[in-house]
Length: 55
Image (tube, rainbow, N blue to C red; front, top):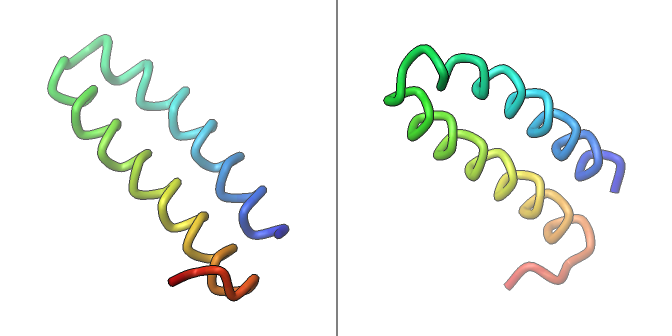
């Protein structure tokens, strides 16, 4: 469960960094969104694997 919480915190931090970059370049916005989504999925996968609910 701790890993999942850490993943969320990392995602929030990345959002702030990418938010500043997106202002400079619109392309960064799309790239940032994809990366953030991937991070969230990784966090959910960790929890599912540990809990055994992942199918």
